[in-house]
Amino acid sequence: MGAGLGLLGWSVGCSAPVEPLNPVTPQGLAIANLFNLALALSALILALVVGLLLRTLWRDRERPGAPEPPQIHGNRTLEIVWTATPALLLTAMFFLMLQTMHAVDAAVPDALRIQVLGRQWWWEYRYPDLGVVTANELHVPVGHPLTLELTGDDVIHSYWVPRLTGKRDAIPGKWNTLQLAVQQPGVYDGACTEYCGLQHAWMRIRVFADPPDQFEAWVRQQQQPAAAPAAPPAVRGQQVFLQNTCVNCHAIAGTPAAARVGPDLTHFGSRTTLGAGVRANTPDNLRDWIRHAQDVKPGALMPSFDTLSAADLDALAAYLEGLK
Image (cartoon, rainbow, N blue to C red; front, top):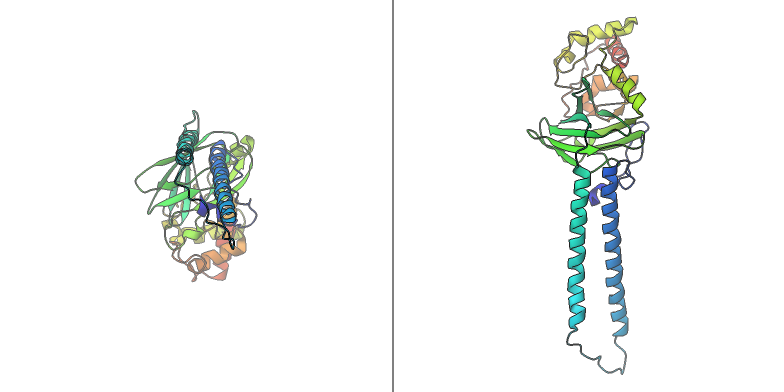
């Protein structure tokens, strides 16, 4: 928790501040309450110890000509209290911790299942009951219970959105779960907190908590295949996409592109960031990302397409930004 509290807020475009002690889920609130209680008890104990120490130092300080202070050979009552109090406090905190763990991990009936796959270095989200696949930006309905099922595709990652709940590892070959229900609409940022390679710092998370009607509209949009481009630049951009190695890594529903190595781009234009948060999703940034991906995010599986002509690059960017 100490390392987490040391995190500074980050932003790509406009985002909410990172406030782990201002949670918007019952699970996050349970964790914050336990932390605040432990912090308050620690502060009281520290104040007591420091106060007694200062009192003793002042009372028994050396005075010229003063007699030696009387020797104390022990106080059994004080020793029992001094020993029993920490033991009782630790026992109480242990049971409160168990209660908090139960509150955080308790399964909720009728929860919406979302599969979270950690990859180097981006997140894939699958809604198996809704037929939706997207990347890096998670949309959830406000007030509805959720079950996030986490796993890793390559190495161990750790999923943490400070205002939602605690951290949970995404481990290859294993499924972990997070139970939560977001109570307030908004945008909540997070990150991978398990070092996973060169671009670990640019494996950002963005969660959009939408009112139920907006979430349903988003789902209906995501369930549709990509709209066929109409404007000439976008039509040319689709041809550029399908004729290059883009199709070896990415999927766009409604086209022959069906690879699953990189993020699904069916509705790429509706996302606010690219490269898992490395840049805001704007036409200029997208062109720079396509041409210089290895300069923007060294080590990513996305190659730099620096041989594309300026006209093809503009057309490809127009096509991808039009995928709403």
